[in-house]
Amino acid sequence: MKRTLFVLLAATAINAMAQKEITTDMLRDLRASYKSVGADKALDNAVAANDLKVLALNTESNTEFDTHFSNKVNSKGITNQKGSGRCWLFSALNVLRAPMIAKHNLGAFTFSQSYCFFYDQLEKSNLFLQAIIDNGRKPIDDRTVEWLLHNPMSDGGTFCGAIDVITKYGLVPAEVMPETYSANYTSTYSMLLKLKLREYALTLRKMIADGKSDKQVLAKKKEMLTVIYKMLARSFGQPPQQFTYTLRDKDGNTISTKEYTPQSFYAEYVGKDLKGSYLMFMNDPSREMYKTYEIDLDRHSYDGTNWVFLNVPMEDIKQMAIQSIKDSTMLYMSCDVGKCNDSKRGYSDPDIYNYGDIFGIDFPMNKAERISTFASSSTHAMTLMAVDLDEQGNSKKWMVENSWGATSGHNGYIIMSDKWLDEYLFRLVVERQYVPEKLTELSKQKPILLPAWDPLFSLEQ
Image 1 (cartoon, rainbow, N blue to C red):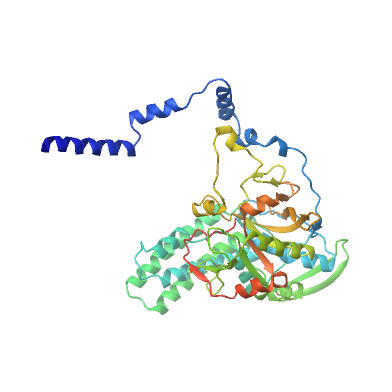
Image 2: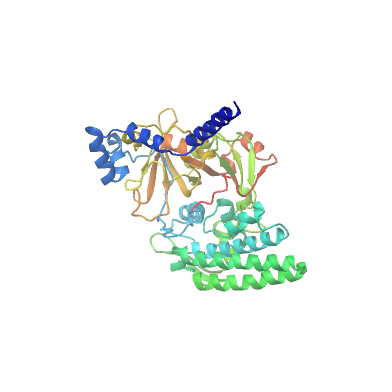
């Protein structure tokens, strides 16, 4: 009896194991489940030999799409971030340059991205090193320490980071500090900088473990930053402390010639408190609406501001965007740009590709489910500049100014259906004057602090 029971238990265990791994029987069943005959065989050949996007393109959308917009903010000069992850910086600077261009009737004016990026990288290096010091007594496998070592540096960023850098260091025209190769193509430089920062992290942790004083540790950090500064200066050039600049209108006529510091140039041509002028909004249906969230260490400088936002429905976001655009105000927005996008035409719509028809299956996850499973996140920042409204004032489609050059998309722009915006927009930065009082009040609530490794920590590239 005992032997029989043992045999039964063993057989049960083996059967349970068989269900957890791919067995010969299971593989036989899987093979038998798929029969490639007739039209299926032709489809197999087509899928194997072609780009899925070409095969899945919705032929009904493969017509000339409407490029008319009822409300549009004028823009001059498509920018190009090239092989870098600086979309967040390009988008923020494009938002800030628009009023300056309109006020002074300028041509394709651009603020220097390299100037701001230099200080962004310096500040991020200090943020990382100081965070290593602040967490120096924790074990190296502590979650925060692990996250820091995994993410010592990035050329991606957020609007908050751009504002902190601009407020602290000012702005200069692109001609005063032009782009360099390392600014345009950051991969090698960034790899070396991250390698050096990780090395420095180990040195600082050893000093703390050996009982060195806070003064000694901070002095060592400053010494490390001199090396980082040298790497930055050789990669991007020395940022100017003062410069003479002639401002000219679109016809080349001189408006003024003055000597500036970066701070005085910012004061004259932007001239407002950027930190107090904007509110940040998010649409994340996986979390409670009308709650304010803050992501720890999601900032660019140690004395800067974490990304703090109010989570609101898309209806609120679209109404604020419409009011802003109607008043000729561009907006910083970020989204999951690669999803459902025909990059050649510069058109995005959830129904643009019929992948399900190719495989005979559905892809039913909604926005909240895609966020919670890391299938979708905020990947790219752009400048929202146009909306097309129907007779009832409802939005039909939108257009953004991108930073991938004038030959990408629709002459440097991307047109998005209203349905696409609902599914793939994540963040919108709005000037306070276009924010309803109800949302302004809600934004004052104490933020829910999320850890740095939360899925919402996403630097736009």
